[in-house]
Length: 390
Ligand SMILES: Cc1cc2nc3c(=O)[nH]c(=O)nc-3n(C[C@H](O)[C@H](O)[C@H](O)COP(=O)(O)OP(=O)(O)OC[C@H]3O[C@@H](n4cnc5c(N)ncnc54)[C@H](O)[C@@H]3O)c2cc1C
Image (cartoon, rainbow, N blue to C red; front, side, top):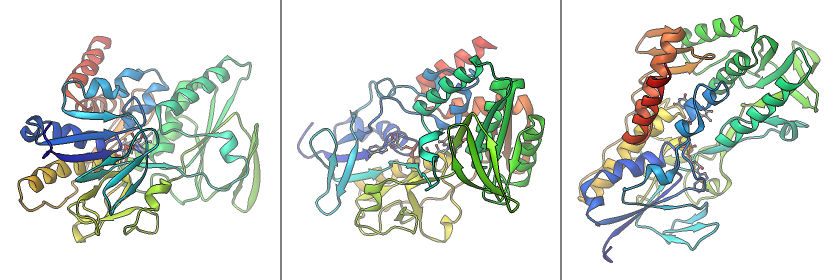
């Protein structure tokens, strides 16, 4: 590596960060030592979150949805630094890390995602489980195994939050526990899946009815104890016996990101130009769940893997353009559709006005996601496993 090489530092190896690194690694100027790319990520494994639910029903195995960074980055010119950023000095272009020495950069990519937000509800953090990581999924698996091994006839699970995470989780858990399942969904809002279209909601309600899942809307959780939850619904305070509570109702920005000396919205998200650059620091890019893109063409961009993945592609191109001294391109989000799993082997795929449900949709969803997995080699291994197992 020569002294002139340009240092690009990427913080976070999720949909935004890992895919940016992989796109960059395909460019010839990366292969030819003109720049040095470092990906900082605390975990060993990437997580393909849309397929996390399939772990609960045994439809997919850990290696398929959570390949190691070592495997994904093998043979690529990306330095993997397993560490956690604890802050960035934007003025002096230095990233502070928890375990190792600070990193200098010429260009920085912030892609650290968001974290669970715990509301101040008595017993919530102590008794509820979350479902955002492979660790969460394994913890939930363990709890479900213990419940299944118990003498209890009915296993009562409350899912708090009726967004995609809550509805998909409720359907999968219900299918996993089968006839013993008694699942309820609780949400403060007036509707389930409020960011989705009518067709998706209709399919979700059908799946919910078929599984006898009770939905409590305009309902707020008041307290959780080990064996009971209390919630306020229709002017009544209801005590409900429970075996397990799953919390899917909130995420928030990581503390040090909210403390960065740059423009943020009222949720602590970083404000970026459509070119994905911070307003005050053009050498710093931010993508994924931590950003709000300003500009008239950037309305209603959801916090999804789909948009983080599209931003990663543009960001890699912009980094190439900057090194060539050319002007940047602006991000334009293209909504390709929505896909939700609604139980074991079944899904809804909704794209450009067409809605497909049932097991065919389940298969198509799985295939589409396999083609979105990082690296050709990993895609092929998962696809081969699917074909062999059918
Ligand atoms: C269970 C679940 C299911 C989902 N299903 C879908 C779906 O079906 N379709 C869809 O489009 N979206 C889905 N999403 C949303 C999607 O996962 C996110 O929108 C997407 O991952 C955002 O990408 P990101 O790069 O911003 O953050 P992430 O993918 O969350 O990546 C952030 C990365 O940063 C790392 N990190 C955190 N802190 C630090 C630090 N201090 N230093 C360095 N690294 C750090 C994390 O370990 C992580 O690897 C789902 C999310 C969950 C939790």
